[in-house]
Image 1: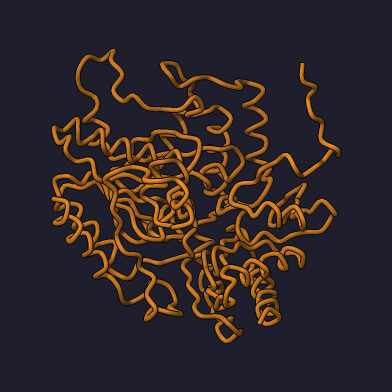
Image 2: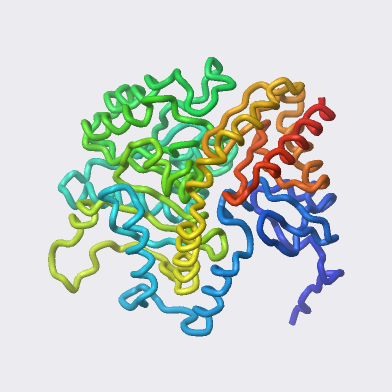
Length: 442
């Protein structure tokens, strides 16, 4: 019998293969946190780290909020797990109802998942199945967008448009095409939504004619492509996309895993921009990052199309063991209550002008090539170091952590998405540090 191998140290870093991380670099200079409260993490060596990215775009109400913690504790004592496969529990229905009340009009059916990646694949499967139920089984094509990020499962990776996320995995799903991204040089340093580029939505016309519109099931886009570098929709772009999808009978899916729950000043960016899709994928801020959970919000007419045939027959052969998990549902209800009680979405709106002004104050720093913002999300593009793409932004991210602020780097872009509880002075602390680090990295 083989003797199990034991790591040499109690906290040996070798066993854990971190996701989306340069593991060798990380383990040379690990960025480890052990506690969190409010706007701050605490590092393992006791330093306070101001969280300028809401953990990973998800801790919108700040860390370790007592209302959410207590809800999880109470639920764990009362009911730890119940399957949603032909049984369930009341709190999942309560959360679904609360979500339906704050969602865009008509999107009042909720399918629970455990992550944004699962939400995306769920929405894509619902789209394909819906067309089949409606007698249009030939609609099998899915349209994503360049630079889009829709998670890392096979469906989301296929419709996603970030090259590094796709190139290692072969052909992925067949029948997928991509719209052009909306990051235009002529819109550099726009404040809020850029003026130029609404006509980029017309690329859907070309794709539809190339493949035949009767073969296209769904278009999926992020209202703001956050992981791709906070790429904003030009004014009129989403409206044009909505009109084209309606005209061709194509379902429009908004991926709001990041933009949902206050990031743009409303529950969803769909409401901020006044464009209603047929489905919304969400996760992250749904539970304030406390327990993994995602959801797909679906128009009632899409849901109802499946509710045909014998009543004791499964309508949709899809789901997850932990769909509607009791602890996640309890965390979700408490999170929605906290958002309401503290009026955090309105707070995000009120801080957006300050955030914009401070972010754009970095325009004259060396090697800054663009700045983009909307609500409480923003990005700073940096000129790459010749021969070493991504290194400039990555090194600034490392040094920021060591200086006491957590930011994100994606390619040669620095991304910010602070919790909605951030203060004006803390916004200033973030941009002041970035001004110094960007200058020092020149």
